[in-house]
Image 1 (cartoon, rainbow, N blue to C red):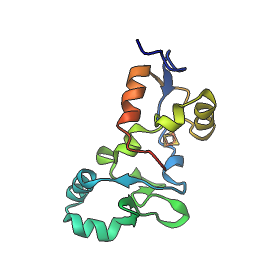
Image 2 (image 1 turned 90 degrees about the horizontal axis):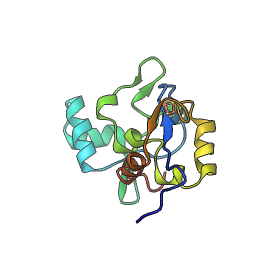
Image 3 (image 1 turned 135 degrees about the vertical axis):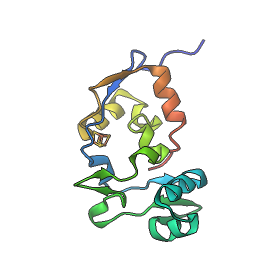
Image 4 (image 1 turned 60 degrees about the vertical axis):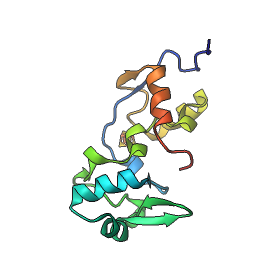
Length: 139
Ligand code: SF4
């Protein structure tokens, strides 16, 4: 039997759409499937989408940033322009493994993200599943 993690009673989260996590330096990784979905949403061929919206980082691709590290798809007026098709990394935030490894890691998220620590209660199995699906191994 596997021991429960420290967040065995679950953690709360409810995104306020403040945009803070969309406007900080970092990478938003996308794989081929996500690129195809985003390109399709915008009516672009994947190559054209890549020229406009992607940067290569090593062997991977990340969305480009606008001024002041804003995600290319985020604006103060409208928030995320591709919200329904946003990458896995965005869908699974803040439950990335590195954010829930210890109570201190989670506390750091709570201090940065106004939606963390309040809102819906996510059970620990759901959190583990989100973490496994995040693809956010180094952001
Ligand atoms: S920082 Fe938190 S509350 Fe703000 S948009 Fe990101 S996930 Fe939502």
